[in-house]
Image (cartoon, rainbow, N blue to C red; front, top):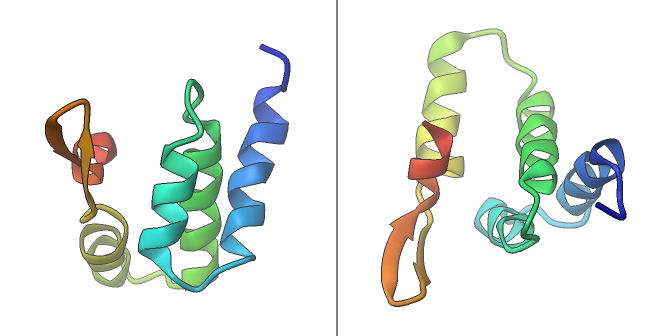
Length: 85
């Protein structure tokens, strides 16, 4: 791989800093195949920005903000929720 994992994770964090639209952020970093590192970096940054120690707030944010986007890919509808499991 030409770019290291650390840099690719930082790309995800960078994208979070450029938009408040969580669905857009997840869509952009999800399409950065073949590595999931940008998606991981974006999710970590979104959770850090949430700044909550309440597990109910955390799980609600993950379920209702991060893992809800459906995506048409190669004729199949998938959801980012599947990637969260």
